[in-house]
Amino acid sequence: MEHAIDTSSEPTGTEPEACVWPLRLDHLEIGKDAVVASVDSDDQALRQHILDMGLTPGTEVTMMKYAPMGDPIEIRLRGYELTLRRADAARIALANIHDAHKLQRENAAVGSTEHPALGEKAYRPRPGAHSIPAGNPIAFALAGNQNCGKTTLFNQLTGSNQHVGNFPGVTVDRKDGQIKGHPEATITDLPGIYSLSPYTSEEVVSRNFILQTKPDALIDIVDATNIERNLYLTMQLMELDCPMVLALNMMDEVAANGGTIDVNLLESMLGIPVVPISAAKNEGTGELVEHAMHVARYRERPGRLDFCAPNGPDGGALHRCIHSVAHLIEDHAKAAGIPVRFAATKLVEGDTLVQEALGLDQNELDALEHIISQMEGESGKDRLSALADMRFAFIGEVCRACVVKPRESREHKRSVAIDRILTGRFTAFPAFLLIMALVFWVSFGSLGAWLQGLMEEGVSWLTGLAAGALAAAGVNPVVQSLVIDGVFAGVGSMLSFLPLIVVLFLLLSMLEDSGYMARVAFVMDKV
Image (cartoon, rainbow, N blue to C red; front, top):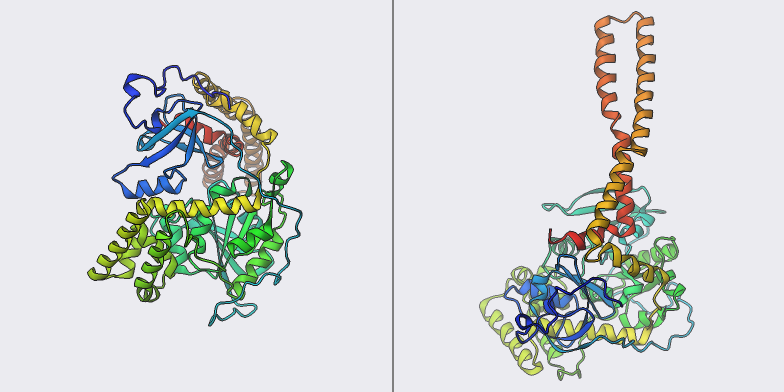
């Protein structure tokens, strides 16, 4: 990719003040590749958040661009772009800095396969699980990354049968609705998140909702064009041991650009039903609802919860660690109503919320720390890096087996070309001022003003009509004054602003849908 901005005044990694070894990500030159050497932070939650985004030691990253004011930065890793503030990037040490290259991941040998119908896969209820009788209420939770089409899918599933509020105790949006054609089924749209780690309020809300409310099934929506990044959350949701369906969204875009995904093989490797859909075109949503209702009604839980390799590069150290912790806390997890595998991995991460919920005594905490420390010594990795590496290694294995990456679409090429202007160092702010001036001119000076004039004429006509009717009816002059000078004049003056507000918000929503607001956030973040 060509340089998006002029970096003549940006640190290049060769200047004396930038030559502090090891070089940090916030000083990597545009167009250079480097390998993450370590992630250093006293804030464990922030460090885990960085690792969860894929910046694990040994991962190659490419510096794409700096914001016009130098902060934030955009990098490419694991096949997707990621934006970081420079303060966070400064915590990431680099090694093996070299010119950027394009190493394409080897595509899977995927043939043409038909997606199985209901009941064709052997997803069986767990022993002792009771099916939900037909007609009884069923509760779903819709989870997924941000910008993966979650809201679009929610609207397709519920239509107008939805209401918006907040989760109890927090100002995080919550949307609930009834699934069309299934009045007994309700679905809650959880906040868009990238993992179930307790870093943001959205992550805590989503996790607590699933663990405490215990929905009958999860619908996990994944962006098929960016499947490597999205599957990280999928693996954590599977550890919750709750019936779930994976919705592969934007499959039409994947197919249109020469890509494909072996859905059958993906199902067998993950152990959950996978349904290809296009939420924007409402394709595949009927089959998704059928699978979701099926796994919820018959309590069909994920076929696998274990993603660690017994004979992996670390000699199976993490595998033994997780299973030892699971054995140690099994009775506590069952008493607290927390899935054992989920609780075990969260304890390895050092999740204080889970630790407090389990109520472990000091001897158990000491044993837990001993098990984890032993794993760190055997694997040569700290606990957070070991878990993140385990998940991304499994995701890589799945993608190599199931996914043929699509070629770059014309839309993406066009978007990159536009970015050179909208986020360029010398063009971003003039473009922003020009666009916002155009929005306000249309809202208040041309279209909005014309609609406002029509509204005022309409109110005046209606006021005159009402005044004539009241006078003809012989209504008391005081009442006439109250209605005409009070109600009509007061309400009419406020209504005259309505066209301006409608046009303004319409234009702003168009900017948001076009993706420009995300670019504004990138450009204006430092300001």
